[in-house]
Length: 92
Image (cartoon, rainbow, N blue to C red; front, side, top):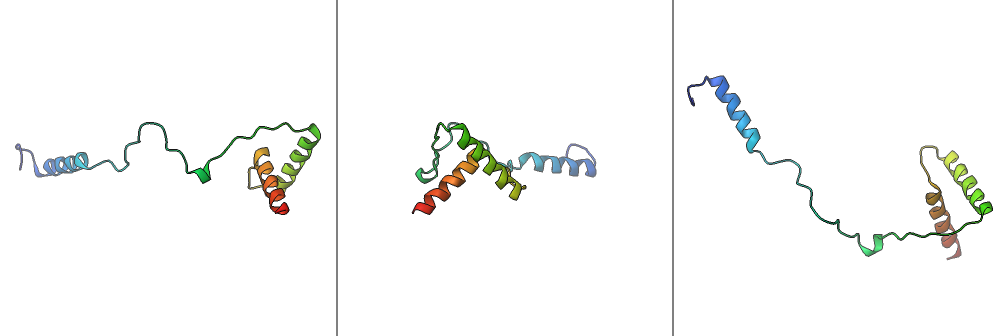
């Protein structure tokens, strides 16, 4: 026994010491600026002007796709990327 305490308290004290001495389960967060993604995964912002009629058609198509797949949450940009990819794939 240690320091004149009972066996139960000594066991509890040993368990507490074991918990204190265990390393943290999660690593510490790294400091500084996050690393840049590889070149093939970088994203560029594209800003463009669109006539109102084309915007209405895009919104109507977005609603049509959203109705067909209600479990997906699609934004205008998502649908625009999808249409751009389909159009470029069709011309290739």
